[in-house]
Length: 280
Image 1 (spheres, one colour):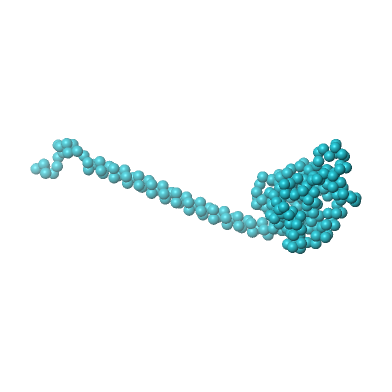
Image 2: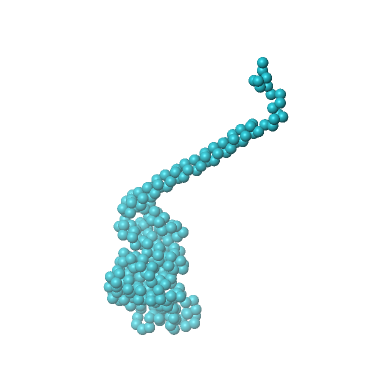
């Protein structure tokens, strides 16, 4: 996969976390948003975060009109496209550019934005207003600079629906073709592992100089394990106790059964038995 080899080739000596997302996929954005609370500590220890976006091309636009006519869900005459039941494709592509600009300005702000965006805006019919509200009123970022970055990413002047865009071109060149979440830690695919397991693996990679969170997490995990061991022993004791009680009940029933059988011997069977009264 080209998108992975690009990052590994450029950052061989670093710890690389590469996350592939789709702007319409809530799972991938939510996963990325959870990284907000951990990223600063790991970044200080050398973690490099790489983001790749899924962008669709119009497969027939070049043949039909060689990218010279506007397409409703595309920029660049169909070079870059996106689709969603909640928002127009051009709004989605603009959002990808916006996020890319924010990531370049500050990874910390980017992750804060993504965390809120994935919760509030993804399926919101007021898509653009929701995004602007997060920027202006929650994370207090100057949206004017962001708008300038978005406008500067288009090549030339005119209808943006027909213009090429260097940010979208860069993302497409990474050849990320998945419409769902993918996660690579260095060259290892950990997509199917839970988020917490990814954090554990980051801690293991940094075991010589772990961030404070790893030490806290290790203590919590150890205490949790101790508590689980104590619970296991308690439940095991209860099971053994119940088994002993059941065995005791069965033994008592057997003893009682024998006693009852002895007291119920027929009179005929007692004839001929010598008793003390018959002994002179």
